[in-house]
Image (cartoon, rainbow, N blue to C red; front, side, top):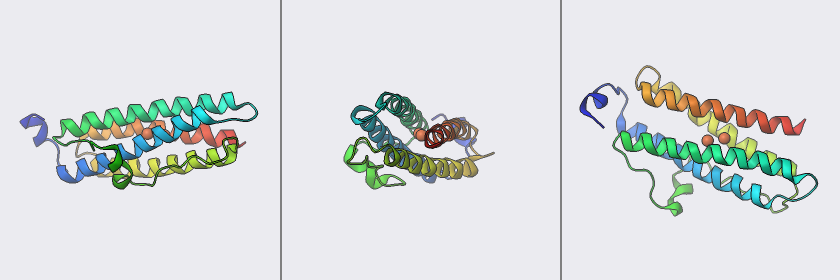
Length: 158
Ligand SMILES: [Fe+2]
Ligand SMILES: [Fe+2]
C-alpha cells in the first residue's frame, strides 16, 4: 500500500488485517458448505434449494476474493493453507446435515452462518467507520449481501 494510503487509515493495521483474515476464513468455509449442499441436496423439488445455495455460494466466494484483495492492499497476507481456515475463522464450519433431503436443517445451517456473518461485518463496520473509508465501503457492500442471504433463506421457511 502506498505511503499516503497508509497515512489515511487511522485504525490499528495489524488488528484490522486480523479481523479481515478471520472473515476471509468464514467466507471460504461458507462457500465450501453451500457449494457442497448445492451439489448433494436431494428430495422433492431439490432444484430450487440447490439453485439458491449455488447463488449464495458464488457470493461468498466473491466476498473471499474481495477480502483477500483488501488484506493484500493493507500489506497483509491471506491465510495460505486451507487446513488453517477453520482454526482462524470466527465460527466453526457450517456443517452440512447427513440427511441431504432435510431442508429444515439445511436452512438452519445457512441461517446460523449468515447471522454470524452479519454480526462479524457489523462489528468491522463499526470499527472502520470514519477511519478507513475503503475497508468500510467494502464491508458495507458485503454486509448488504449477507442481509439478503438471510432474508432469502428465512423466506424459504414460510
Ligand atoms: Fe459472505
Ligand atoms: Fe452470506
